[in-house]
Picture 1 (cartoon, rainbow, N blue to C red):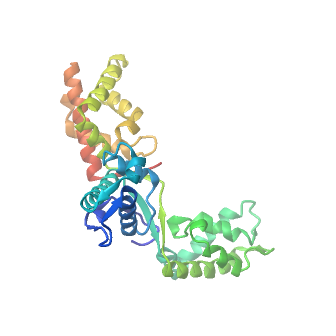
Picture 2: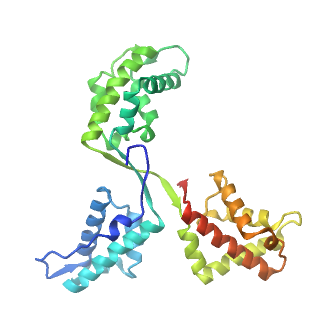
Picture 3: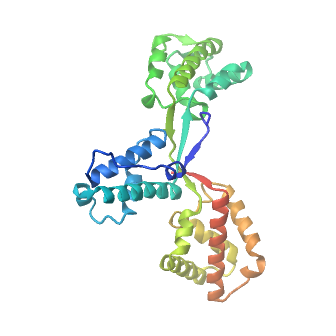
Length: 324
């Protein structure tokens, strides 16, 4: 995947992995089994370290009541092999429900800008204009650093802390020195810097994890499959129906309730994403206007349940992205 674009890690890569216990090991501790699975999973996921929350959630899927005791527990070779497979599958399952979103920065986006004179000229002009906040036609040389920070992952610049070679490139070009740059001088200095960053990324890609949640209906499907949890939600929405103003129709009331409880049921908020309104419109059209005229409580509960099912289908077919 070219840099700047996003890749979704949903556990698919892990499902084809087949791990085995080293031949030299007659027995392993629980900690060693977890380390083997986590190392294999990380290697399969572009060498990304697994987030602690992911490891904790996956471990809880193994019904391990006392993680500390499990770490010290000695397992036979057969038992260790079984736990290894179970834990790797649990990591994959957790990623399927809560995928990670990454960008692989390899310099390709930067090269696109550099290879097209018009694209680069526009990029340089826009950056210079943003940095020239006082409209003097001049900026300090050190502002080149801020220009790269403004470009960010979307245009292929990795975070400096994850790719310190950027600092070396800036130092090589004397960015920290005193002096001011006009727009043309700024562009002349920016170009070789971006070229060297692109060349460095080609030799060593940088993988950046986005602070992004993918809403794919998995949480909603779990809610629908859990009768107790579903009944709790239906009771809440019915209670709000009874309290609702008379001029609020069923569609508006359901939309308002789900928007208010979006995080709880695994739905996107309309405040964060305008496309959510279109999703609701599509679901309501599929359900049909006649059902929204129902006034009996039992009919209303069934209506809400059907809306939730349709929303889960919509999100599974077309997942939505939301900043965490």
